[in-house]
Amino acid sequence: MPCIISTLPIVDLEAYLAVLLLCPILGAGLFSTLLVRTSEGSNWRAWYQWQFFACLAIVGLLTMVSVALGAEHWLAFATTLAVMILAAVWDFGSHARAEYL
Image (cartoon, rainbow, N blue to C red):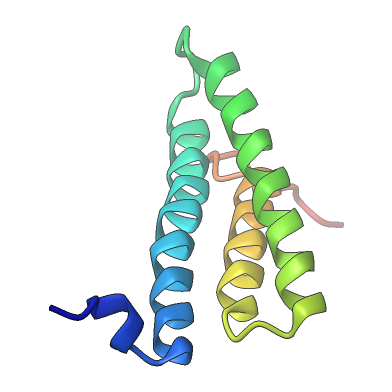
């Protein structure tokens, strides 16, 4: 019986492996963003922040590598990185607006 992997074209195998690696990494990055934003006042907040910054570094590094290599999935990494950065700096609190003169 022939090996199934050896009968697949290389391009399809690379795309399959890229998706298998892409989804968990990007999911972890977005999930860590959600944890940090919803953990205000929690005892676990410091751990969630550490996890967020680790995921931010990993997604940032993978974004640079995928752009440099010309990979097809660079846009997914770049979008996830942008969402993570925006969620980190955007103040979602309900603060009173400043009155202008």
